[in-house]
Image (cartoon, rainbow, N blue to C red; front, side):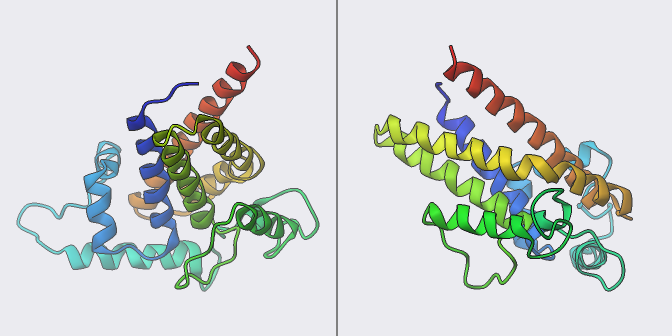
Length: 216
């Protein structure tokens, strides 16, 4: 299955930026990157712009608003939307709880492929941002292998992406996003979660096409 370098690069950028959105409270650097790669245009088209209204140059106020929303949605105190697969998963021992069987599966999967966790991030292995970042790293590796002409291992890397996506991301992210959309009080996380759902749908179609190609 042939894929352009641009398409591969776009997939990696999307996964990495979305990982940053759900990893921690937003920063000016994150918002700049989202502008660079067009995510803010998507949100703006949905009716919300992070650009301050004319005559009101208050980027700090925008960041503070988003920080409060991030804390309320994902950290608490009070009811929150857990960004961990094990809480949303309906399978394995400890389903619906932190550090369930699924958490161990994700940890084993990531470590099997030789990837390490950032030293400054102390979250559990099945945190949404880690799973999204893992996909970005797999896509980077696929691209590197293709650039070296190692097509066999590049295709293997692509199959690993499909396996992780199918077993993990596709099984819970849409439901997680539904909860965020229902609870968000300002448009940013509501719209970015809708966008993540669209990305998941596009990826599902992409991997389905890949499966069909392999069987023909």
